[in-house]
Amino acid sequence: MDRILIRGGKPLSGTVHVRGAKNATLPLMAAAILGEKPVTLHNVPCLHDVFSMEKLLNEMGMTSEFTGRSMTLDASTIDSQTAPYDLVRRMRASFFVLGPLIGRYAKARVSLPGGCAIGTRPVDIHLKGLEALGALIAIEDGYVNASGQLRGADFALDFPSVGATENLMMAAVRARGVTRLTNVAREPEISDLARMLVSMGARISGAGTDLITIVGVDSLGGSEHEVIPDRIEAGTFLLAGVGTCGDVTVANTNPEHLPNFLNKLRDAGAEIEIRGARIRAKCCERVRAVDVVTQPFPGFATDLQAQIMAVLCAAQGTSIIKESVFENRFMQVAELMRMGADIDLDGNSAVVRGVPSLSGAPVMASDLRASAALIIAGLIAAKGETAISRVYHIDRGYERIEERLAGLGADIERIRE
Image: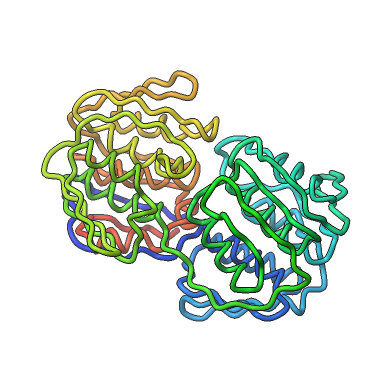
């Protein structure tokens, strides 16, 4: 099992190019099921989760070709509407195939999902929404069995779930009649999915707001679509720079996708400079403490909570971080404390008292974003070596992160075992 070794205490400096968004790519790949002609995605990141989704689609009969950063998916060869447990359990995003399968074929058999252990993240909103659209749902032997010709309906989500919004959008584009989804997620990945579906012939309006209206169509064609840049990756690299009192620029990004996050960096003492698709963050001294509450977009992204906690562990003052999206997303805390962090947990809140410096230590990653937090903490640590194990988590969402950080001046290497 690979490990990442870090000798910290060095300010990062330079420019890093942001890859395509994992959280946009996966539902876009699932949406290719709906097309009666091939779909080609550009700016696709080379990540384990992307390969896992491709394998799942291949298992159902879809053909694919992944060359460079472009992937072509052809659903005309699909001969199975079953997403098996052995593949779905590895990645929660595999559940995205449910909506397009029942939307196109009026039937689907999809295993209940797995993924990072950051909370229960129930799929009840997905299923309630599909039932509102006329699907018959039965859960048997760990599988969701869905059937029925979908029809347009009004449905209000109990919570603005990104995954449920995307699944229901994909299901509704081929439903008969008009569907109105309210209290939906507004994340940039939602708008990106809507743009591709529209290019395939779907009739969707309101993506990016809390009301999405979908007029069902009989069929969808193909598309050539460029995936949006990964805002979480951009934020992670910026935090690594700020936490090490460095000067880092992320290129090929969209500052409009990080409004609350950039304001928090400013509050923490970073100088932020935005020029087109480039964001530069510079910090010449220890950051100041700030309070953070994770919220759906445009609020502070839960996927950046662990990373900013790592930075605030070495801040001047005391910060309070409240996690309001997932109930079990402080799994990085115990490992950060092994590195000298002073953190108290109280339910869904963490009190982070900044210490003058962190120290390297052997630590273990528990999930994707916790992995990124431990890397940032290792870069900040002024003494000792940080050895991070179970780094397969990081490979799910960050492409060759150790090489790209080394390009910014980090003393970091991967030990392959």
